[in-house]
Image 1 (tube, rainbow over the protein chains, first blue to last red):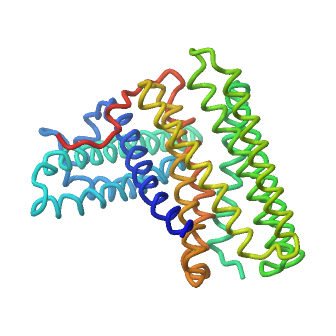
Image 2: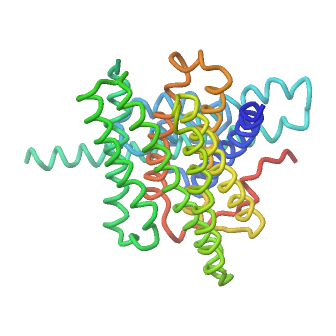
Length: 136
Length: 233
């Protein structure tokens, strides 16, 4: 009985902590302006980042060399994005009021992925510059 | 039998724990995060001990089993100290550090007394069920303490991003681990296939999340907590 109670409470608390943690990461990345370079690379030069751009941006992130300290956060936000997709799917039939909120959150996830991509591009450039400098 | 994934988790966890300790010392934040640094150092030492036990006695041995579960219980109690230091950071301006310290000592004494009574009553059969029960209870207490701290952060509109992210990461760790222990108590059959992976993954998650916070979020960074509570408008 006690184990079942602990299990139910833990799942509820876990979801709350996990969503808040992901939102705190998104809130920090929202403050970062995207560079023209990343907008050009990801094909969003003339518009704002959309919720559907997330998968494409994460694929681009995977193509860049890892910096080693953001992989867990990308996975966590990816899981949150998956959760939002499920909520969006069900909210269309059940709670239409959730629609705009999920879209805003998905945009936040895409913006986070774009910031990660920007950071990794800068890192790749630094690596390249360093290699060129070592050769000469 | 341990596989490559177990060893990978072990090595990554160990390296990140040492990395966070070095980062805290390098940035001269040792006093501010003293309990966290000591906790991570102890986890790294316990990891080395686990390797020793696996090499000498084997993964399925009783020695490794008891070493794993009892060191985990001690580490959880050590993690309570980290939570208490977060409480102190949170309520620093309210000048209630003395009360928090007193409450912390009382809590630790109560936990120690409770554990002693449980161990004393079960000394004839310190079985698997007992260590799982103890782990479940300790993690549940940790989760409640973290949840209360999170409630205080929201209520007092704390804005320090670093503190917020570290507390949230701790909450994810405690709730996931407490849930795993409870599920193990309810469905022991799930342990070998599914549940055995969760504590090591969570054990790596916590230092990685803290490492990310130290690397990406400055001490001066601020965040409105109202943005973190999910509400559909």
